Image 1 (tube, one colour):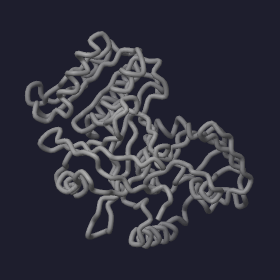
Image 2: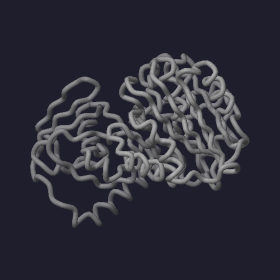
Image 3: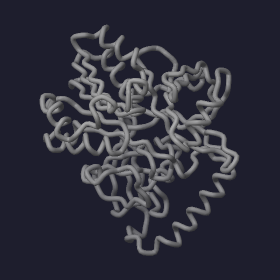
Image 4: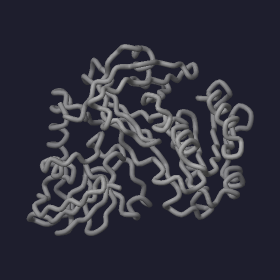
Length: 360
């Protein structure tokens, strides 16, 4: 079992809507540092499964690190979604569940900018975490555009109203209901967004909604560093170290190796790697090209961030400062992310004799 897996006890379960529940967790004293999170990050849960042993799923934190409340995730049932339905049907206060520490890069680096937050459906989970944190810890304006199917689908409806009353000069929440207004169009979103061009934008929700909003942000020439989107991905691998999962992973690796004959060749010998992580500068001259960056750093005793190990989330995201790497798989980074030098550490092999990256 991976040494970064923790067993947490459920403290409370709150029904937010007919199909969404929030789960808060007790954090043991010896895990307090590991679960010191940033707004907008997610937890990875090991949901029990009769078929695979465990289904690893990522759920965004809806709580704020500034509030002093226990870490809380909010889960919305999805049609035929095994994990979300199992959690809402079975997880109760006092139950234990295995969890990985918070990860993710969908979080403001500073609170120096006004924030424009787009949420769709359950995509509100990291958005309200960011909003609550920024309202308490910062002093800038926050505008929220929250799209839902109908009034009954609005998650955190009461809390949004309470926040708006508490911060009337700083928070504006626009609720867009498909049952009343229809689906938002690109023209409508452009008209709404045009007056907030100086804001930093965060987008989370269903894929078509995010694609539409991101198209508007590009059209209005929001700089790359001021537009961010989160993605919900069902992990195909398993980061919890179960024997069944390990056997499946080995089979997948063997199959991938047999199909990888056409992958571009990198350096034959050891590679120089420099890493900026948590304010530290790490330097090595013996990175074997056969190991991913994550595997190599772990062999050196470095606790580099990761979650899925399969290129299906952004927990291990790095930014290239020098050199180049090749990724085995990428299901999360967009072309513009790649153009900005962002890569996935769990999938990266060296393509140059020297590589320098930052995890910040």
